[in-house]
Image (tube, rainbow, N blue to C red):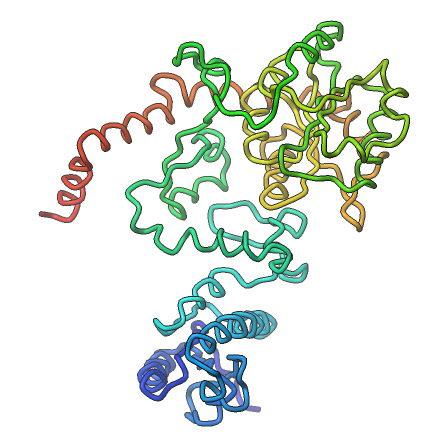
Amino acid sequence: MEKEQVWRGHVVVIPYPSQGHINPLLQFAKRLASKGLKATIATTHYTVKSINTPIVSVEAISDGYDEGGVADAPDTDTYLKAFKSFGSKTLSQLIQKSETTASPVTCVIYDAFLPWALDVGLLTLPIKMEDLPLSIPGLYKLNYPDLPAFLKDPDSHPAYLAMLLGQFHNLHQADWILGNTFDDLELQFPAGEGISDLWKGTLIGPMIPSAYLDGQIEGDRGYGASLWKPLDDKCKKWLELKPAGSVAYVSFGSMVALTPKQMEEIAWGLKESGIHFLWVVKESERGKLPQGFIEATEEKGLVVTWCQQLELLENKAIGCFVTHCGWNSTLEALCLGVPMVGVPKFSDQYTNVKFIEEVWGVGVRAKEEEDGTVGREQLWFCLREVMNGKRSQEMRRNAVKCRELAKKAISEGGSSDNNINEFVSHVCSGGKEKVKEEKHMNGF
């Protein structure tokens, strides 16, 4: 029986489908194969038959013109767009297929004419249940429920996906990459130790008004921009009559629109919990409330169209925050020490809630049904768990710890304050300090 070849790695090489591009990349693939790597040329269906070399594998990907290649396209622009669309999908499938073999793809080398291959090589979409957990150096392992929506279903929001991927194409040219979070939140856990190697960002957060943390900016109690008319007095007066830690504040942000079914389940879940609640329901969403709900809960609940969220979270009556887990809301709750019930609906919210529940230990995730709805019993259970369950005190302690870490980071001498000072010095010097440093590091 012939002994199976043991490879040191598996490289896929993708040339633009013309002779002058195929030849040098094919030769490079042969060189790599001679060094002990499995080398695969991924080329179009039209050109795949023209390649035959014993030490390099050949696989077909689609350019959208499988019968006649570029000659069948009406013009070059149309061909390139088709190649990007069909090529991305079929290259992704090729990489995924290799994961089931003894030689999964470990490297993608692409022709300069095909930059979209980098996006596929970085992340094969869509990510499926059988591909998980997703493990990235320096980050926690992510299971299917933890992934951002556009990774699970990239066709659901193609414009957002393109925008998010597009932000990296020139990132290497930026002098600074600033992140709205802080060192102690991201780096205090073992998995966070690799983040600084993976992503050279400077953390300058939390970016919430100074009055709620360090007080360095006089009179800074609001962001200074609001798309909604606040109802502060009504909220405050209602909260004044409630015991400390007895109220669940419920808000799903300015963009999320719940389905009528989800609104109904949230509504009756709040009622059946028996807990005081203050629910922000935008004017455009009020028609989705169950008939008679407001009247049936007037002794326990208050439904308003908007409130100043920071002032609410700071109020001593608030015991937990039922949130969509957008990053701004998550950061505000962390900075004000409020435990959370996560009901994610979009984008990074699914990943944020993993950290809320499993990493920082400041809340729980409400589990969804198959149609994406959080049922009333599940919401009721989560509210009880956070407000007065077995782990509620632990969550409160962790939330208070996060608040103290946030204050420390942004206060004078804290990690974020120091990073901001360094950035200011760089700006004031016109970047000269960085140039001097780089020259020194390079031995000039």
